[in-house]
Amino acid sequence: MPELRGRSATLSRIVAIRVLLFASLAMALQAASIFITHYFDDQQLGSMMVELEANGLFRGIIAQGDGIRYVLPEHMARYTRQDDAYVTRIRSSEGQIIYSDCNVICDEHLLPQQVNPPDHWSRLLHQGKPISVAGGQAFDVQGQRIFIELAIVNDHELVMWQVLERAFIDDLAVPMTLMLAFLLGGTLLSLRVALRPVERAAADAENVDPLNPADRLNLEGMPREIAELGDAVNRTLARVYDMMTGQRLFVAAIAHEVRTPLAMMKLELSKLDQPRARKVEAAIDDLAHLVGQLTALGRLECADRSGFSSLDLAALGRQTVADIAPWVYDRQASIAFVEHGPVSVIGNRPLIEDAIRNLIENAVKHTPKGVAIEVSVGPSESLTVSDDAGLLASTEQARPEPNDGVGMGLEIVRRIMALHRGRLEPAVRAGARTSMRLVFAERGAD
Image (cartoon, rainbow, N blue to C red; front, side):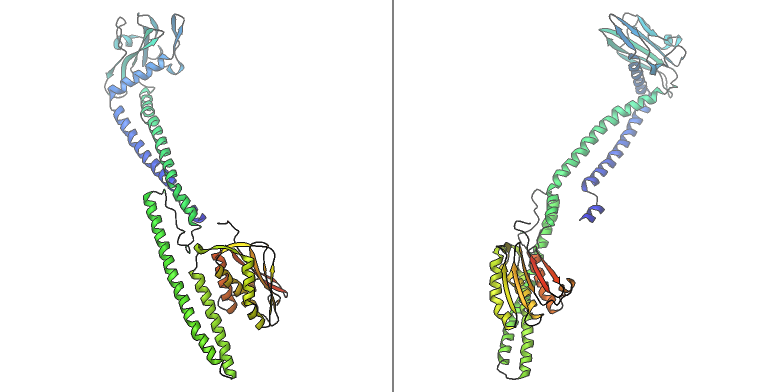
C-alpha cells in the first residue's frame, strides 16, 4: 500500500490539476477576447482613457472648509505646461478655474468654459494608434460639481496600455480568481466528502477475511461508479470462498474415505503372525497418520471465523492431554499438564485440539524413548508444548520444511494459528529443551 501511494496521484490532485489547466485555457481565451474587444475599439478605448486619467487627477483635489485647492498628484506629473501632449483643466460649476495647464490645445479640443459639460464625455481627435482623445468627467465635492477636462494629443506615456491593464484586472483577474477559488475549493471539498466512504473501505480492506463469508467491503455512502467496483470485488471474494470451500470439502472427503480401508487392512494383517506383516502394519500406521493429517487439514480449510466462540484454553489443553496420554505412554514417553492461571481465547475448539495434538505427536515421534513432554497454559493467551530431549541446537531447526513428517504437522499448526490471528513461536535451549508456543490474539483485538 505505501508503494502504491507513492506511485499514484490522488484523485483530488488529478482533478485540481485539470481544473487549473482548463481554467488557464479559459483565462487565456478570455484575455484574448478582452484584448480584441478593447484594443480595436478606439472610441471605447478613448473613453476609458479619459475616465482613468480623470480619476487620477481627481486625487489631487483638497477640500478646505468652504474652499477647494488642488495639488497635482506625483503620478500625474505629465499634466504640466511643459508637456503639450497632456493638458487638463479643472473648474467648478460656477466657472472658477481650480487648476489648469491649458494652452491653445484646450481652446481647440475642450468644451468652452461657459458650457456646463455632461457627467462624462469623450471624442477622438483622430483615428488609429496612438490614441488621441479629449473628454471630461464630473465629480461631486462637498456638494459642488467639479469638472475635470483633459486632452491627450500624444500618448507617449502609454496611458492606453494602463487602460488595457485595468481592463484585464477588472474583467479577468478579479472575477476569474474568485470563480476559480470557489470552483476549485468546492470541487475538492465535494471530492473529499464523496471519497470518505471509499477511504474507509480501503482501510477496512486490509482486514477483510476471505474465509469469512460475512466479511466484505462496506459500500454504504459510496458514489455509484465506485460502489459498482466494490460490489464486483465482493462478488469475486464470494466466488473465491465458494471455490476454496469446494476444494476443501473434496480433500476432506478423500481423506475420510481412505481411513476405513486402511483400518480394515490393519485388522486383517493383525491376524497374521509374521514379521513381514508387522512391517506392513507400521507402514499402514504411517499412512493412517498422513491421512489423519489430511483430515485435519481438510477440517482447517473448511473452517472460517464465523463459527468462533469463547474457549477456556486451560480446560481445553487439560482435556486434550488426558485424551492423548494413553497413546503417549504406549510409546514409552511421559506427559504432564501445567496451568498458570485461567486463560480465555476466541477460537474453533476442534482446530485448537488438532494443533495441540500435532505438537504432542511430533514431540513423541521425533524424539528418543523416555522423553518427558510438558503442556503448559498461561499466564498470557498462550499454550506451550515442550520436551526435554534437547535434540535441536537452534530455532531454525525448529522450522522444518512442510515436505517432511515434522514439517507437515507444524505447517498445519501454523495455518490454524493464522486463522486465529495468532502465531507459532518455536524456542530452543540447545541440548536441553525444545518448546513450541501457541500465541493467540488478545481478547477484543481486531
